[in-house]
Image (cartoon, rainbow, N blue to C red):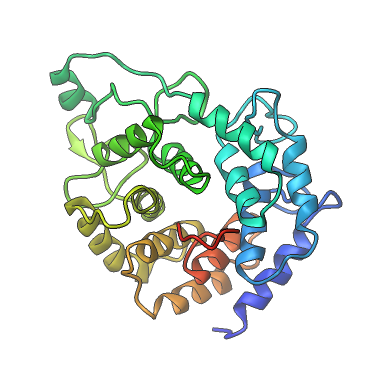
Length: 297
């Protein structure tokens, strides 16, 4: 495995940038907010800053009048990538007013409650459906990953004690799996506990650390143990990177994690859809999401 993988990763991301300074999921595809924010964060984490204002400007142009950042020109009504834009704007120290507008939208955005009897919540749904976090699509049920990303972004913007963030934390804790880690949001389906996944588990750990870095709970310990057992055999860049970041957030990441990241990049560098994963691998190698203020995630 190349010891110079990070330089190669930065070079690959620079080569994939389009003429507007933004990124798509694959070369030749239209840019998206998620790919642009995470690729730019990867370049920042890897020590580069070339032409990042153009990426920030592209994201600003995707911002709706209500403050949400649309996923792309074609999917302007989908705002789940708003936290990604906030995290990049914050890390680059750019676009204070768009960030404020995006934060206002996030605080107002609410996943849909499902008011069902408590016995049905636990027996059928497997989680507390009355807790309100954030959703993938406006007006639908709250799910783990958009909630974790919203909590992360809001904490970076000084909103860690806001009631919406505190309820988001409760939702994340409620969705933890009995034997450790997190899946996409359900705990059980048809009575069977779902399997944990490294990506959602890492995002959940990051969000919990952002709200209370000293609150080492039993579910955190279980999740850390799960990731330490799973990540050595994980090659998928996005899953591996979020998992490594989750371990770093709780000061539990072993030194050999760098070799995991290098191995993952080398295995997937030729993939056409490697943009997001490469950006996240660079962020994970730095040990935390970049922050203009220097605060850890």
